[in-house]
Image (cartoon, rainbow, N blue to C red; front, side):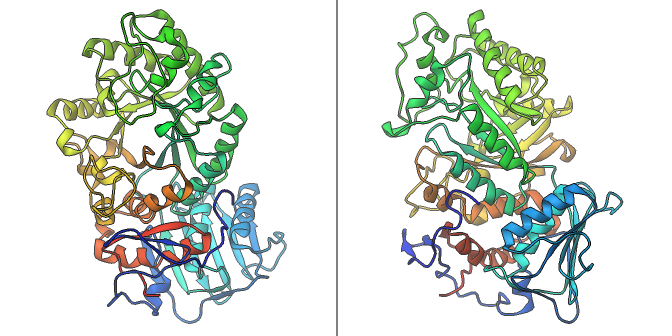
Length: 524
């Protein structure tokens, strides 16, 4: 793994307020863990997200040692998954001619009946077998296996049968690399976290007022000028086409599809600073922006040159992105009239379609015809008109991704003691991130129109890997269970215990995490 994975552990926990503590490679902290079943078989089955069915078996489990082989059956895709999981578990791979059942077997079987991305895991004294109808299911079964093993790797996998598949087809994690730039290694580290918890989309917010982060060959000033800045005057940066492809490939190997976002027509100051002709006559002279206010910028929607710019950018991005969806933003364009805004977004969507992509946009853009609508507004900013627009989009066939800020924005502070983050959407405790139903967010949107859930990590106040992790953990696992596990199978009282049991796994990865209130963290 890359980035911060594998960092040294064993450093002391650091206080970050009265209710929230930050742990760096350790798992001491609050909560007495009473009644949580720790030390029993229950603690060994503390899998997140909770599987659809998980039945403890009788008798001994399977003992994994440093020489336990990882086998593959069913073709090259099974072999690829086995190789990756062997690497993650620090185990050797074996040829298909190895003794069946003598180790950990990844079996690809199109007739397995596990469904898309589903899997079946069985563990007993003679070995572990993970069976799936597709490669994603095999990979997710492998992630469950990681949690069934001790955090250090070798040990006993309990005797168990797991039958599992996701609730939603879309399970996303968004990362803002525009406000502060994050290296390829940092993005790959975020991918590692998403993969561990069975997310399957990475939404990269590549452009904003403060920075433009992807090189576009036909528009070199975007990175020469727009890529040089960041919030607070910090160092900027950008991805070359090769960098971006490396992220796409790294994510794809973990069954994660990249959804890139170019945010227009607002959030566009870095683009306008790079190409001043994008501004309308009479608009303020373009200049670098390093603050965090929103809603002040706009590209000129009445110039044909603006649409040539959009076509250049979207066209190159489409060629670099194998995934089916591009995100064009469309939020907080406060300096445009409604007619100007709708005309621009409608045309931008058409440009995306012309380049062979489905187009996603924020919920303000729902009436303009995007294929995917991403809901972000918290209740106090939601209007009947906004809700009606999303419902109408769903009625005409658009899919809806739920990211309401009061639940899914993991850049918001946990509580009043949190040093990092913002709180314009209110405090987002771990319980707040967990305890909601994505099917019930927007009136008039039927459950079958909800494609899934996306956690979002905005970076106005976050500039390092540890900053990201402090805000991600433990809320990303909470949102992973929202996206994966059936609503009827989820309760906060059960989840908080299983979540606490994840901490040794994070510590083993060298990840920094918050010992947030409400979770019975194990006493050191």
